[in-house]
Length: 382
Image (cartoon, rainbow, N blue to C red; front, side, top):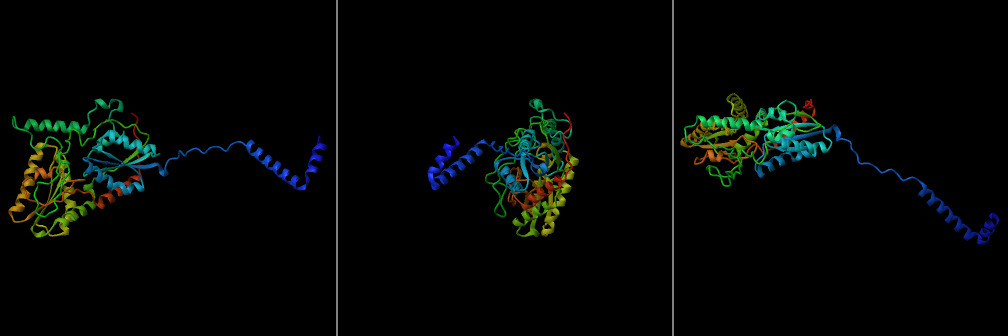
């Protein structure tokens, strides 16, 4: 057999022999590759992002322009942090959605920046929802749970109605009117009738948010900011910039800084004290004739009625003395219900809240950096 094979090869000649040899070598290589086991497939990485840190920014929320302004403010921070926004006043449904989105991206430590005027606003309710404080039911019982904020408002409205004269409507708006679109005062010496001032959906719907109250289902630990915008010195710069853009003759101008305000009297005094600190930056900018801070206490009709009288008296006196009133809202966004409150009076306002302004973005970033260092608290066992 071998002899015949050798005779065949010799008969081919050198050139043909070289060609056959090459073909045989190539066949051996192909055969060897086919026999080799396939390379293992690479599995997608399941590693958490560096540090596993993410951010939830809580904001009241409202009409599309309100929400868009907040999203625009935090947009640059998304380049550096895993970040979600939870609209609503400690709305468990909104918080659950934001936390789940972060956890799906590997986040396990979450800094919660509470973008509210007061650091006291909704703090206890947020801790309950996150499982850091007892009080919130499990999600399976959410349908029967009443949000503490809603319960508080209902009780206070009922008390106010009892104090009102029989048959008389409660003072002020029964709903949380006033997060509507504000047309703005471009011209100096304008009036309270603002074009495009729409009505907010009322506090029954809370700007379209569910106001659900339940304990979150989460695998994360949390660090919460405790400051509000009223605690930040940078907000004084915002106020001064707003007034400076409207002022024409400071010596004949009276400036009113107007905020929402809480129902509790002691807490309201703390609001006013902090607003006065922020307003000092306005007084340092120019020698205005008067500078005053007020809270409307919008959701408490009996207290709102007295506040409205003081606020309107301030505006009226500015005009009566031959001057101009400048109204600056100390709100996260927009003019709130102030156009309705000041209807028929002469004043100047651009209708802007604290955003848009770079100082608010800087404040949020500073809060994030502080929270990133911890400590983080894990939810307690149900």
